[in-house]
Image (tube, rainbow, N blue to C red; front, side):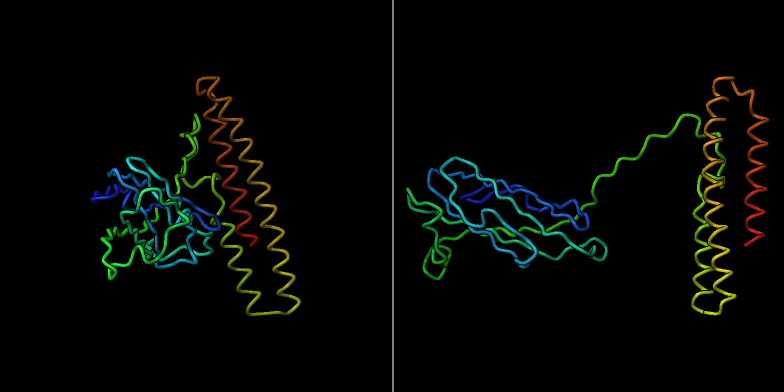
Length: 234
């Protein structure tokens, strides 16, 4: 919070929970500490990127005014999530009975003898809150590197087909690409089926107190054989 002679400004950092392609807003609270009307004006170094409402206004004596700052949807994330944009909030004592329509640029002109308070605000990007999904009961039954994730196989097949596509446009290469793609899709389908069977086995194992451990080991072995066969075919 910034404490000047005229206004208390909270916060001093405009924190935006950054998300791509989404408008994001945050608010400023301007509290008038005096028994006089206070006029304010908000400026930014990047006016096309932000919308400030109201960007000028009057804070009545001993009252609070809220200012909403909205960042337009961004197509790209900044490097290292750092933002160099800044805001400047100017405030000045205003005559009694003045309204927002009566505010002029001359009121904030120091050369005209006006006492203008200034407060600089910086912009901070924070990551949007992401809730981690709770761990599933019995998840310890799934060993590391099992069928819970087939991303490595999919990426390897995709990289191989991409290389063939860029290096050779012959009919034989295209036929091989089609074959590998079909086998990749079949592997994914088989993976999903085995995943479902494994979930069913985990539930049955929890009900029987672990008596199905032998079946679980056999299923894992079957999975390894299937994936090994697919990798040899590719």
